[in-house]
Length: 118
View 1 (spheres, rainbow, N blue to C red):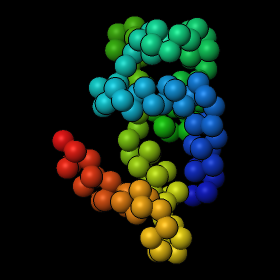
View 2: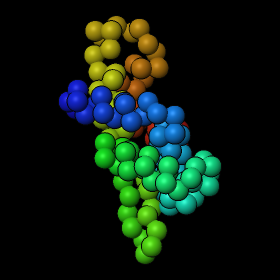
View 3: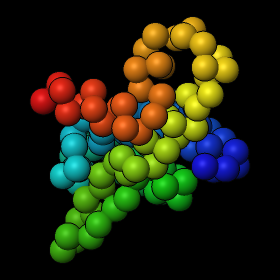
View 4: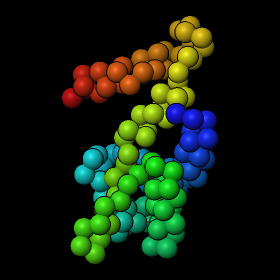
């Protein structure tokens, strides 16, 4: 991942509303949620929600798929995974400084942890 991509994604998540939307979609799983459900869950006006969904889509953190007259949004887990790996790669020059980071500093480790929690 390039620094520009990482900074755009982090900037998008630096907004409280967008972070709430992204976390809700991560919790919803791969099936995702339609826009009206997201708005109801978070108490956001449709125009505001649309603005934030558009921003998250542009930076690649979520994707939307049209289903008749509704758009179904889901988190882009691959993009999230890349961002986490970027942030934790070579942390503390390999020293065990952050135990939680050490447990998930590679994609393989995060997937192994996720698999053991199932």
